[in-house]
Amino acid sequence: MKTIIYKISLFFSALVLVACGGVPEEKSETAAEENAFSVEEVLEMVAKENDVTRTLYTKAIVGKGKAQGMKFDEDWRKDDVEAGPLPALFLRGVATSIIKSPVPLGLYLGSDFPVNAANKFEGKQADLFQEIKKTQEPQFFYDEDQKLHTAMFADLASAGACVSCHNKHPQTTKSDWKLGDVMGATTWQYPKDSLTYKETVAVLNAYAKGTVDIYMEYLDEIEAFKESEKPEIGNKWPAEGNYLPTAEVFLDSVKKLSSYETMKHLVAVK
View 1: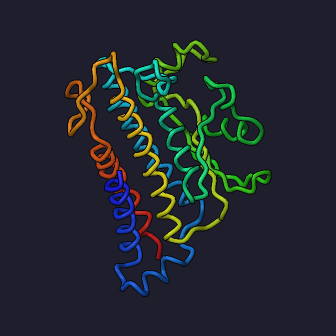
View 2: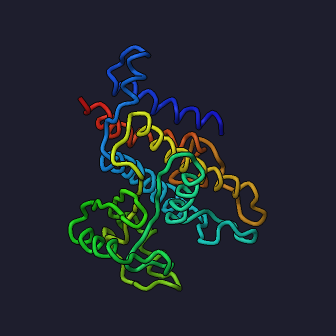
């Protein structure tokens, strides 16, 4: 676990060095302390990282895993349930990890037709979500009650596993979801209106660590299986059979898919 977290930190620290122009350490430290990004830019960066991660988990782990007989359940943490987390619960696990970190980043998922009534949008967020459903464009606002800068991003039905699960769920309030539908919105919050390079990297690190934390919790759950067949954990993916990638392999795949876009943002600041 420590090795994986070190790799996360090292990777994003390298991006900061590039963003600072590869300057000597003294100057790089000064540059890293200057406000460089608006909160909207940073939340867009981490939202894109989240899109890549969740899509990979949903399609390559849940979708392909189900085809191999793997189970995923909302009660996956219960002792008598041998299953992994559904995509929405994977996100909740990431959010829980972030809450435990020193980074003041908030993350949650809401909808106008949620399975869990507690996740239903209300007030201004409900109004902005209607706009998101029309345009699929992110919405930004300042939450006066919480004193937090807030960003909402469309959460799409990107895989058949999402559609079938929500349509068949006993508590569903909508049973005709289709691929590509805007099922909800991920909402991100941060207290400051601008961030330094270091703060930006801390946000990205906190999110990446959250994905590792919840994925490793899933792998630990598998180790405790008594009745179900355990997939082999290593370098292979469910598309190849009854396999699951290690946390390190999963993270490496996420980085390959998302790091280029993140780096473009970091080096674009003059």
